[in-house]
Length: 120
Image 1 (spheres, rainbow, N blue to C red):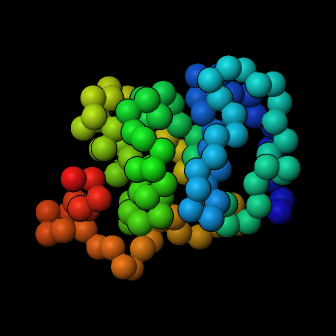
Image 2: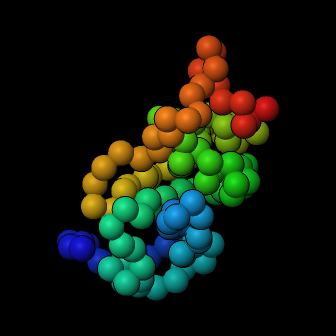
């Protein structure tokens, strides 16, 4: 895996790794200095960098499900956080290491109104 920018200093943002259906916090909440991203991520991982406006308003299991099954996970995460009271401004950055689509689940399609039953 080739990464051109290899370090991250996180402050007021959280960095998560989504791998094999599980979301794991890698950095955040306090400044952590430099983090060698090449040691943390591998191909097919999903990288989520987000602000408190996301992680304070959505439980981890909901974020995991959205990353797995939403056709537009960044929009879905933002919408759901705002429905739970998050302010209009938030940071959500999603990247699949090695490229490819994020969040495609053929078994679980949205209802006619575009919503997923798992948020009920």
